[in-house]
Length: 176
Image 1: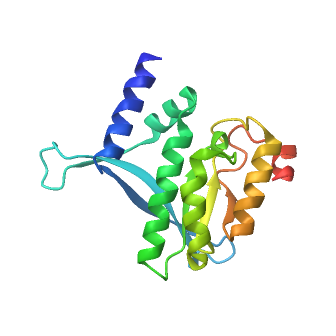
Image 2 (image 1 turned 180 degrees about the vertical axis):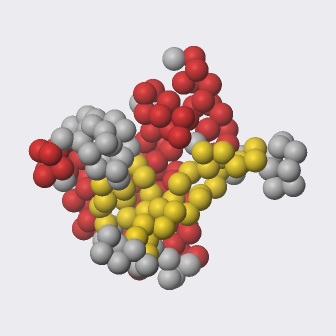
């Protein structure tokens, strides 16, 4: 618990200080690998105190896993979705995906601002892919299915990230 809390505090500090960044990973068409479908945003943290001139960029995976164990993933996921929306607003040609935890698939107060922004920018929502990770089980498949349907109605694409590697059961996938 203490180790997870330390990772969570460090990641939330990085968020408030603007020290998180996206690494862009192309997602390619299985039938034509030369064709890029969209880019997946992989979260990184920036250590400005590192000795290089650009600082040190580190994967945020361990901190994200800690947030899921602590039940705090939704705060990060909302922040990342909001950052992705801003990125899409600034680049009319890009199509990007963001990972969100299965724990985050519920329509509650955490998502009000992001959903309102999506509704205002229909050209953005059509280029936003929500990748549901399998690193945690769905707390409620019915809530997850309802929220995924709401995101689809707004125009977002729903994608399963690394299907078969984690907690997703076939019945959960079919419900989504």
